[in-house]
Length: 245
Ligand SMILES: Nc1ncnc2c1ncn2[C@@H]1O[C@H](COP(=O)(O)OP(=O)(O)OP(=O)(O)O)[C@@H](O)[C@H]1O
Ligand SMILES: [Mg+2]
Image 1 (spheres, rainbow, N blue to C red):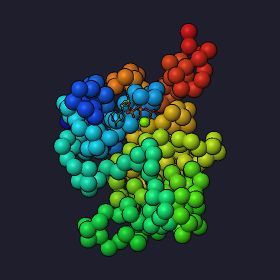
Image 2: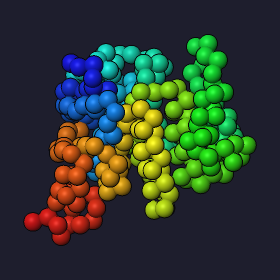
Image 3: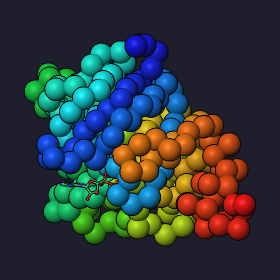
């Protein structure tokens, strides 16, 4: 296994209970600096994969490596210290806290870092809308603004790999584009991204590669452009069923 890979997953089997494996032998990788989109129908195991990588779902067998070091059995708070941040699909902001309080919570506690204030300013530079709204309660933000709060909080830990679970879920089309434009900027800062999305076209448009998961297995993978042209992806995720033969 290879340190130039941000993430390497090999034959991963995982599930919530011992009786039922949700992930049934997943193999994939994300190279440093890449953006990779993970597609798949509802219930395919996309969120479960992210949770298993983050140490939130038990791994039954197989390997997960972050920058060449095994993550299996490593508790989530240590996974974060090793450079992985994860924005879950739902409930990813504290609605009663202000924007600034939410973002500040992403700074790792107790590691003696003095520059959290600097990082906060960096986040407000990246997300000027959040700066204007720094004292506003997160629960009163628009969906797109909330996603930005969640991403900003994750970036406060200075991750090398950021995993996002459906960052555009529930957003109006104009906000979807805004979120993905921001994700492209995040990559330009040197962060590698793994994104679970239903919105295949917009996510693949900023991605290097994509994968399709179905029933806990990788069903298809390839370059982003290749997947955008694929009749199978078109039929499953872009409503272009007529494109398939
Ligand atoms: N906490 C849980 N306990 C038990 N089973 C779960 C749990 N969370 C998810 N599952 C099951 O695992 C399977 C995969 O779910 P998962 O959330 O990974 O799918 P997904 O691909 O993210 O779907 P979606 O597109 O709907 O978000 C589903 O059958 C689901 O019912
Ligand atoms: Mg999901």
